[in-house]
Length: 518
Image 1: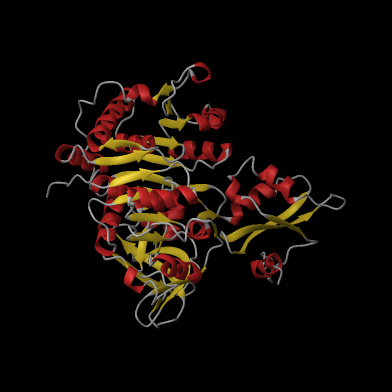
Image 2: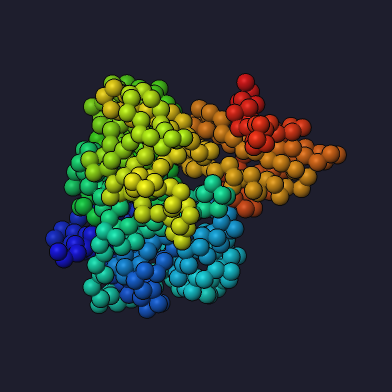
């Protein structure tokens, strides 16, 4: 059987051919038709190819949400290259590591991120620098080529490279338990099958208006609903950053049908002075995921506007959704992450014995298998082997249970990851940096419940004799040189010694109690 081309670039070109006048993107009130977007993608693809990008090469992007984010991704896919969206909150050391680890050929960066990129680029394999946005790349940016110039050149005369299910589409870096980010490999099949799953469960429609306010470098912001809407015939209203007041106005003005956001965003919307009177009647596919969802938040939206926030569960490795709670069960199963997606298998396994849990309400590690699940981690066979068992199940590290009706509830994490405002924070990563703070002898990092962010990061440290205890401001200033700000502690507790268990390992339970003030 011939390979089916499932590249998003090919899907965009098909849309532009049969419905060229449809509005594909809205950026800062500028409407971009499908034909105009397709034309700019073809031009950029030619410019990238002339710069040496070939099939399989990695093209990285550093910047906020924008039309150029989509242009770069689709142009990379036109060439069969791999897209690497970078978290724009990362510190220079983290950017250096990712660009080096993935062997990035080209970096596309916005002017606001050029300086931090330039501070590390000479230590990476990046061979070409492209400056996104409308400003010309001149003066201090003389070593950069302007993306605007590339999209003004002639269109590519090459047909898009066909991409099948096993071809690598995206590398998304997520912090690892070893303290270094690791690249989650997502194939075109992973991306495509998530869309099939979403269409099979969520009330999405071909001409939906989707509001993209969650960061697009996150798999939820990009592939929960946004990419699907763009290539399927809908309109994506893309905003640089999330702003609660503007989001409420956008929903009313553009009659937004679909929206993905983390709980902290929905909480901010519900607390805005205009929430009670806002026109939110158009919202239909309204998905909340990325952190624990307070049941109260679900009720607030339902009571105030009749909007059913639909919970889902997944991660970057599942592209992103493995389960989803249909809107009709939002109130009856509040707190549940839903049922497995149509083409995704899910089971619970005893984290000690590895045996499958079959009894309702019994807890186990959530394991996933399906066409939307990553094949593994970039250039990291050890991490890949540790995440999959012999039967092909991906072990998520999350603990949950299934109720009598088969609905999933996520209750804890087997791993030590902290989720703060939808961002993943791994304690080992911050602990590694805090160990370098002058005078600190040991450091442990835990998450404690937080009404606004779900969890907040707390550092517990010990100091050398005679060393003054550092303030949280001093610790944040130091760690902020190496890590993104969302990973920094909001509190620092100094103790004489860290609690340990009988084997000498850190005992995190007493630390959490201490941090929570219990």
